[in-house]
Image 1 (cartoon, rainbow, N blue to C red):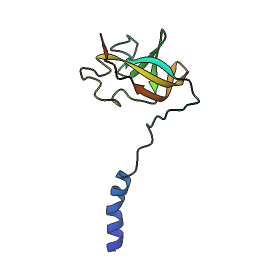
Image 2: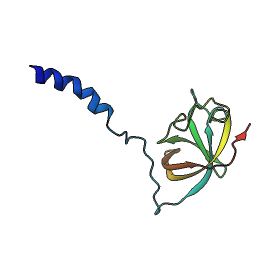
Image 3: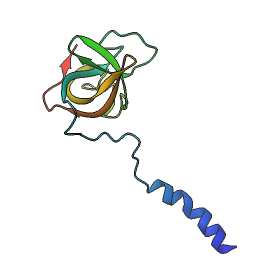
Length: 115
């Protein structure tokens, strides 16, 4: 009985120690690298939507992103967050059904462009 109770108490600890691989985005040297801008689709790119969401602007087209969230790179509502600034990024992925399926993203070190 003691072993059962000890085992049940340890299960949450083991599950918290597991690495989260759901949102990992890995650079693929075989895929095309795209220089783009990223920001909140509604706040900075004047896109239609009901809530703040990450979007990228590639050339003259803007797409909502699937594969990364707006708060994955800090607070979106901070001074240089995605809802207040447009950030230069390097991305990999493809457009599928008018959504950019992101497989890799890297924020450039230069300053954010503020609206």
